[in-house]
Length: 106
Figure (cartoon, helix red, strand yellow):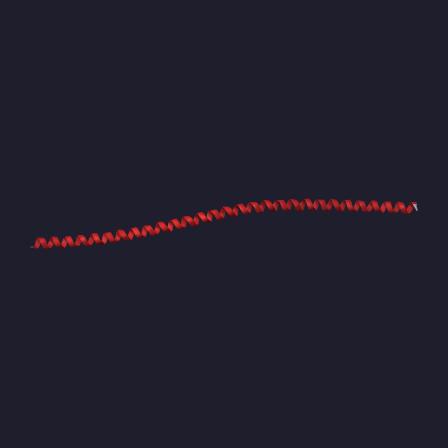
């Protein structure tokens, strides 16, 4: 009976040692996975910040493009007005020259 008890104690100690090693391995694996998880969270935060910055840059670029398009439209309108004024001034000049020739001819 003592021998059976000794065998049971030995088997139990072996089993406890195996379970201790298993627990150590699982603890190490959990720690490794936790560190990996923490690294991923940091990376997600960095990428989110980068994405937000890029979205802000995109919005700024879109605003600048809209302003440039507005400036271009205004410049084209001004150019058209100036061309019209130039045509009108040229027409007036031609009329005045014609009137002057007519007056000199008389």
